[in-house]
Length: 285
Image (cartoon, rainbow, N blue to C red; front, side, top):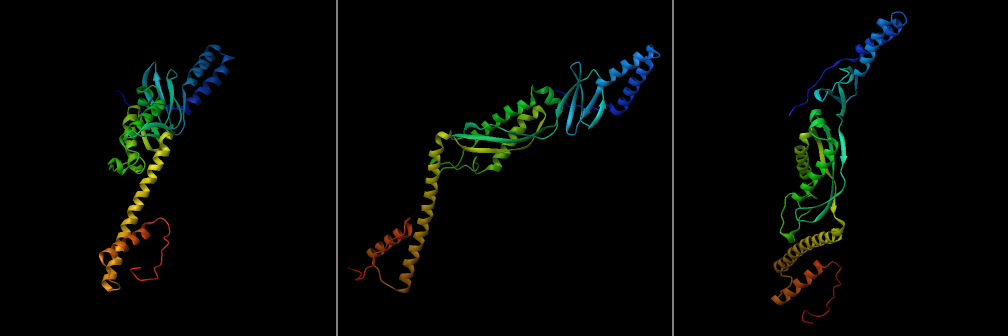
């Protein structure tokens, strides 16, 4: 496999001056000495197709009858063999926002995902000759990499599935982006393309399970909140009983302690304001 060859052609301004002098001189001599004027004009016409203009962050790949000669990456006006075939390849950074793909995550749940890729050509030989169309190659390989990435990680962690993944598509964006960038760099290296940045642009459950998964996430959040509330309520009940016993405010037997604990847990764990009933009699009535 060949690699890129940097080519330094002739200065185009000097050749432009030469072509101008040959053309003007040929026209002038054509009226007096046609034998010298015609070759001068023909030479000028042969020189003109050899001019190559290279803009900033652009390049020209040169071929001679199907053989790779080299690549011009310097900016400016140059002159090369008029028989060279000149192919333009941009060296600028390009953005690619992929379409939203429906893929299955590690758990088999359908998700919609897309990626944003920033890339540029670093090896013009590979981009021009090792792949058929390097821009289409980027699009196809990006879609393939996103599908593979989505199948490696779950969308999110759920306790009822016994899943304890450190990396998920939803919460580990940095780690997922690094994995995506590495995967794309391996795939696009054969086309002489450098991946500057790759990250998830869109991520959501597919429409057919979005409502169910939303309810599932809400239920998980409610259970976690209830667990925290109960944990705090138990601590408060323990503290209340300990303070009452320590200060001898009232002496409670086991039955009354159980009733007090039950009432306090109801008040502390209820999701609505409690409406207490005041007992104006004795403890037994």
